[in-house]
Length: 453
Image (cartoon, rainbow, N blue to C red; front, side, top):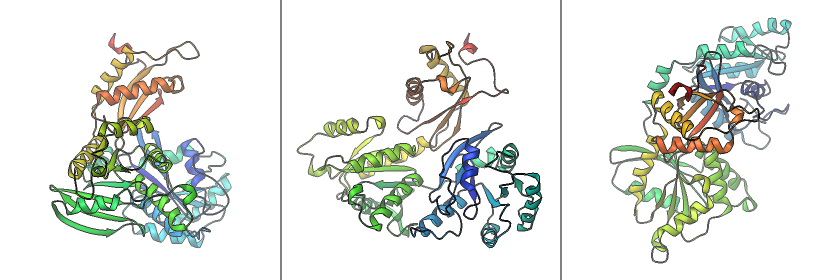
């Protein structure tokens, strides 16, 4: 990830999800006294003193899941640990140090990652004295807090920011990304595996199959024109009412997980079949995850004599109007027709998702957009202002707009600004995450429109 990640780790029921919601300032993760409620990871972006980072909620280490999803939960925890720049080890001061805390300690001790130990449920000074018992775990003095009673939130955030890697370290890490990972998703029998097999056999140099993190996924690493890529084949999905077995349920869960972890998504359709509810659900998930996507119409050799590409393209745009910027490819996986061209385009989207734009250029674009079409007056009869813009992340390109009143910008006007950014920057075919944030006291007081006068 482009932004530093802080993963919240610990045994069940120490308050990890409560801390996640508390830091995020909203109820995002489900909080319940029953162990094992958190299964999948959840992320949220925070900002403190100009540093942007993501917090990641994970499941409890050592849980025996009632639905026998231990393997799934463990995989999510491991991804959260390995992808973190800082591990926030949460303990429960009221329970004291227990055997599972020692188990978590042994797991974290061998990692080359900073660990911040956080003693939750310190609802008073007497409990903060009890927190000293966790000093023996070997991660330094615990940061005491209480998510439930809103105690020491600023101290916790300050401790997090202090331990984050520098921006130079983050930028250096970004340059070390070795390859593009693309996922093939879609209904059953749309030709995903055939496409992968045809692609790997086409002008390959190195091919190795590596077992994926799940039983029914395979990561296929290969080289095409000297570029290393990883194709992630996912199980075909069925309609909800057709999901009758655990294997079907796991297939849906794993396809969603693969979407979140891939760099580019190839959303595949069978040219001889109509778009289904499953297709729409998958595309909604792809859009919510801000993932670059290419609509791939496969088996085109069966339809080329009966239909022109424009009709299928219009059909896709009519069904997925919010993804109008996504490119469309027509391929025949069985013969490899247009497959190499498709992968070249996927590489282009991958580069777009990792591109950065300079702050001066970005501010010029936003200034011109505000002058051409000023934001409507707010309910208080005052026009909302934007003070400056900056790119704060990649994958997806994340643009932050500092303003006086984020709520005063309507959804329509936000779409207008997003459209201007898409048309003016080299992010034309990938999702852009735009964040409107209230100006702090240290930010400039002159809006960027006023600075032109």
